[in-house]
Image 1: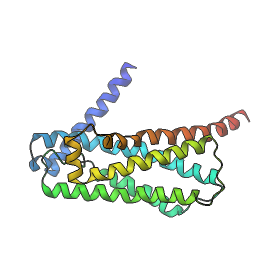
Image 2: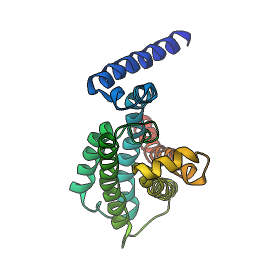
Image 3: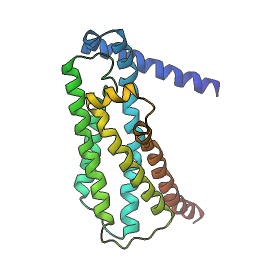
Image 4: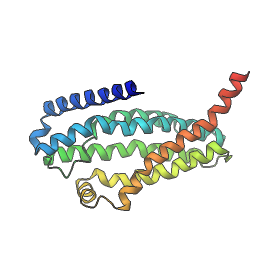
Length: 213
């Protein structure tokens, strides 16, 4: 266990060192003080992890909702395309928590636009899931209940997060970090967990029967 911990720590430190080199290459540290460089080094490797947590849940929900709605998923091409778009955009939104640290207006504008753009494919997913439910013969088994909870929490967390993609919203959040607005943005993580629960209740019985057979 101790060796596993040391290995994970080394991977994390290597990631931060590589992030620092990227930050220096981009010249981000020249946009403000040393605080900019420090926060950029933290955010660059860590922020894509948020989407790494969410993307598997998106795939699970996209499989479960059509089954319990007794319909094919609405707009399959857009659902799959939005997954690719989210994965790509997740690498260029990492500084949208840094509007208060003194970045240049140009960098603020770039990360604001990229953060707003990533809301488009995520919105596409939500509307496609809702369109799949619309008019379907929905069966509220346990996986579907967890999928419904995921939809509610993901929508709340996503809507509250859009404002943080704007410099004004980011500054307000930095000055008032204990607001319920920020807290409701964090339910994205709970939503992802509900997606995992839905997948466990949906696939585990199938795996168990296959193993028993």
